[in-house]
Amino acid sequence: MFSSKTIEQFKNISTPFYFYDMELLKDTLELIQSEASKYGYHIHYAVKANANPKIMRLIQSYGFGADCVSGNEIKRSLETGYSADKIVYAGVGKSDKEILTALETGIFCFNCESIPEIELINELAEQLNKKARIAIRINPNVNANTHHYITTGIEENKFGINRWEFDSVIETLDNSNHIELIGLHFHIGSQITDLSVFKGLCLRINEIQEWFNERKIFTDHINVGGGFGVDYNHPDKNPIPNFASFFSIFDEFLNLKPNQELHFELGRSVVAQCGSLISRVLYVKNGINTKFAILDAGMTELLRPALYQAYHKIENISSNEKSDTYDVVGPICESSDCFGKAVSLPATKRNDLLAIRSTGAYGEAMASKYNLRDIAESVFSNEIL
Image (tube, rainbow, N blue to C red; front, side, top):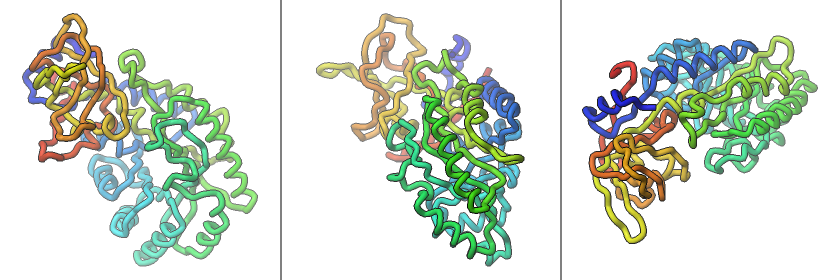
C-alpha cells in the first residue's frame, strides 16, 4: 500500500498519526454510489465510524446522508455540509437536549428504540409545536454471528423494540399527536461478512412488515442499518467490500411495497480500509519467551484490540530483514494495551515505522486522552503526496 516515497515522507511526521488514503476512499464511495443507484437505494454514512471533518466532507460530496447517534454528531454533520433532511438519528439513550437539537434542526427521521422514547419525543415536539418523523427500530431477533459486543439484533440486546411490544407501540402512536410514523428500522450488528445473514434479515423484515400492513400501518421507507464487514486480514487484496453482492441481496429477498424507499447506514465498510495508524518503535524488549515491540501508539489511538480482541494487520514498513516474532504492544499502563501477539514481522528495531492497517473506522473516532496523552494527528494522502 505504501510507496517508498510515502514511507520517506512518513519519517518526517511526528508519530503516532492516522494516515488516510483519500484515493481509496474516493474509489470506495464511487462504487457504493454506482451500485446503490442501480436500485434507487438511499445511503446514510454512519458518523460514529469516523467523524473527521475532511473525511465527512468527502463522503457528503457524493450525496450521502448521515446516520447519527448523538446530538454532537448531528451538529458535526450539519457543519460538514450534510442536509438536515438526510440525517437519521438512532441510539437507545437520546437525552432531552439531544432530541430538542434534532427537532429544531428538522432532521429526516428519529430511529426510536423504546416506547418511553416515543412518548418523550412526542412531548418535546408538542412543546415546539412540531411533528416528529420517526421510524421504529425493531429487534428482529436475527443473530449476526459476529462478536457479542457488536451484535445488536437479538432479544438479549439493549437495542430496539421487540415483537411482543408491537401492540403497545401502536397504542402509543395512536395517543401521540406530534409523532408521524414513516419507517421501520433494523440494525443487527457490525462486521458481518456472511451475506446469508442479510438474507435472513430480509426474510424477517418481510414477516414484520406484513404484520404491520395487516393492521393498516404502512410506512414510506425501510431502513436496514449497516453492519457490512471488511477484510481485516487482507486489506490490500480486498480494499473495497463487494457492494454489488451486498446490495443485490436486498434487491432479491426484501419485499418492498410500491414506492417504498430502502435506506442503509454504512460506516465501517466505507472508511475502514482507507485508514492506517502509523507508529514508531520505541524499544524492542526481550522477554522470557517472546520479544516485545513497544510502540508510541497504544489503545488510546486504537481501542478495538483491547476492547474486543479485534485483529488488525500489522506491517513493519521500514524493514526488509528476515522475519522474527513479536508481541506488538503500546505504552499505556494497561496489560490490555496490545495490538497483536506472536506477530511475524521483519526484524524490528528502535525507530522503525509500523503500520496498523484498516483503522479508518473506529480508530480516530474512539481515541482518548487516557494517561493524558495527546490526540494523534491526521494526515491525508492528497496533502502530502
